[in-house]
Length: 469
Image (cartoon, rainbow, N blue to C red; front, side):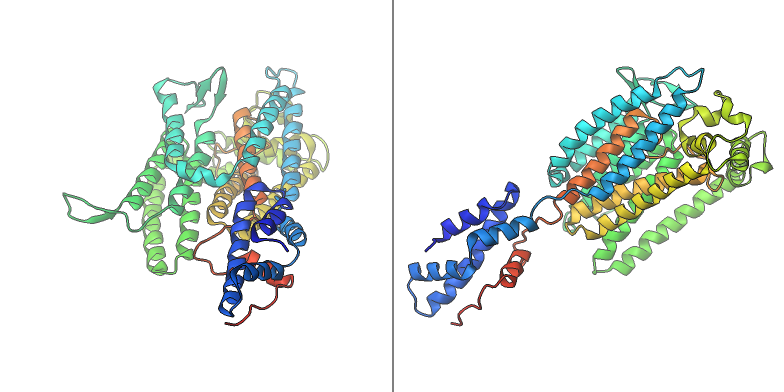
């Protein structure tokens, strides 16, 4: 007859994922003790009560094997395959750029080098316990802010009137790195929010929540820094991501959520009106927006790029290079600027290849949304929501901009647009999602939960009814 300790050891030996063993053992032990108490109340001695309780649980090896299936880490193959296809498109774009006679960069070689680095770092992230990141949310915000500020202090290179950062001859756009870091920090602070942390302002005599004040200040500073790069597009994307995360979090809180949502969107509405009035008051900005959708309104000015895109679309083939001189001119903005990747691909390969890319982008977006719904652990769920929001907004903005259906912006297509550090950041972001998905079936043990999944599982596989006292 197995003792309780022997039973637990046999069960745990069958569970391959070691981090899950402790929680499973604790949960099983609680069930054994509950059953044992029932036997003790019926007058059975303690040793015999424990033996009967263990026997009632069933075969240790069988339970262990079935629990192992439930708690076995899983790789999200569907998402991984979609990402690999997107990376494949990125390599195709690099090869097409390398074929240009006057090219000065080895796009393909650089892409492969950064891809290898990104994959190695992604493997580390994949096996890392993502929940440990949450306690470093403030530090992550500080790192992101340093990345945004340092280029100004060190006078980093200016490219198209935009401040870049250079480290060891590697040049990158600071918002590309800081944006996901700001979002991860924001999520960590939102999840850790404590409504009981309050302080009293000496001047106003009003009570403020410390966490609320910190989140508000962190968010405002991050958006201001984005605007000062300048990177209005990324500031808008980050602001929308903040709003989506905050809205979902408020919706989960049943207490006063209507008032909170009305207050939040009331403030957003006022801010939006101010922004719109500012745009209308600036003829240059207003003309830029109009020309993004109607390039003919200013073909030699703000609409120049839109006219090039329109010409490529009008002359695009189903398969093959568009019959236009634009695609043969390497110095043309379409062929030289990274954020025109989608229209570049249409011009070089045809509508069919670009259509396949668009389909993969849509499928990836859908898969990310599905993942955000099936993850139950709160922190992991919001991380997926945040990263997915970035991917979807960046992809949507780039594609629409490239076909004259969106405002011209300095936004790149994730995994496809050439950019070494940007590729690594995208790979690490997806690795974090895969790490969260990997642990999706591993129980989160809550002291306040009366019955866990394991308890239900034990009942399902045939544990007998407890003896009534």
